[in-house]
Every structure is written in C-alpha cells, then in structure tokens.
Image 1 (cartoon, rainbow, N blue to C red):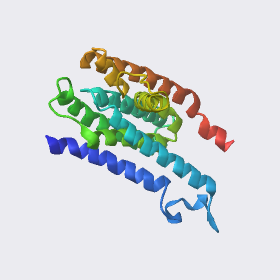
Image 2 (cartoon, rainbow, N blue to C red):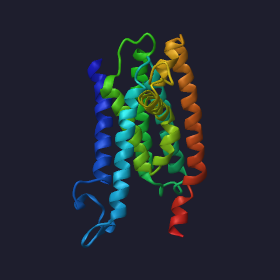
Image 3 (tube, rainbow, N blue to C red):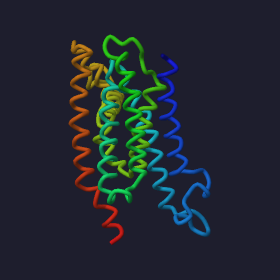
Length: 239
C-alpha cells in the first residue's frame, strides 16, 4: 500500500520539476527561441520565470501546513484538483470545433483526473481515524501539482482562491509569529489555524468538513473568475 501511495506523489513531483525546467531553465537554451534576445535573455522572461518558481515553491511548502488533521489536505487537494480539471475540460471544449481543439488542455485534464483518483484512494484510508498519513512526500506533491497546473495554465493569481485554504494556513502562521515576536501575544491558540480550532475543542471531523466547504466555495470563485476573464484573453492578445 505504501508504494502505491508514493508513486502518485512521485509523479506529481516530476510534473513540478518538468514545469520548472520549462519556465525557469538554468541556461538560455531552456527558454523558447522567440523569447530570447541575441545578446542575452529578456529580463521580462527571467522575471516571469522567477515569479513561477516562487508560486511553485510557495504552494509546495504551504501544503505541508495543512497536513495536520486527518483527511484535511487530501480532501481540499481533491477539490482544488477537480477545479483545475474542470477548468481544463471547459477550456478544451471551447478551444475550437471537434478535431481542432487544444489537446494540451485535454492532457492536463487527464493528469488532473489521475491525481484525483490517487487522492481519493488515499483519502479512503486517511479519513478519521487515519490508518495512513501523508507526510511531507504527499503534502509537498499536492502543493507542487497545484502550482504546476496554475503555471501551465497561466492562472497563478487564481491560486489565491483555488489554493485558498493553504494561503489561509500560511497566513495564520505568519500572523502568529509576527504577533508573538512583535507584541509578545498570540493571535491564535495554536498555529496553523486548524490547530486553533482543535484547541477550542472542535472535533477533527468537524474541522475537516468545514475546511472542505470553505475550499469548495473558494474554488467555485476561482472557477467563476477563470470562466469570466481568462477565456477571452487569447483573442484580446491577438487583437
């Protein structure tokens, strides 16, 4: 069972590594020719690559913070992955008539579906009380996979909503550390924030379900923004 759980995580990490190489190669040869200058690399390209690296590394690490309650990270990760899959399916369908559609979108949707399947299988054993735990291998793979989808789809800003739970978890830690070091007081009983609710005697199941609901609402907002604003971007750019 352990090997079966590690393989999806390994595949997700390789996906992240591939995206990093595509968007932020160590030499100019990794950057598309049309984006490279004769005497060096366009600073805008380098800046975009660095922004993508920050997004990938940031969400990779933030996923670890949500891995503290049974089923929390797996459930919110499934919701986020489903959102990306739905976005790619919608984008594939609207990319052109049958036979002339963007197959990259379909490929990304298939990868998303595969990761969802792996995560659902894991969640079956990770639900409270957990029989197996995710650890850094799985949590970083979840965060990295979400970052990879955002980078490939060029929707990094939407990570604030689709990965909203991880943003909230990270902010709770930063607020707690800043407040304690600056004022000597704690804002939360314990950080990350899901431990705060544990300290308030909420059951793990109650925390998990409510965080899933919040994640679903945030992902719905992210999908709505994608559908409203991102579909028309290619046409506007070409105009």
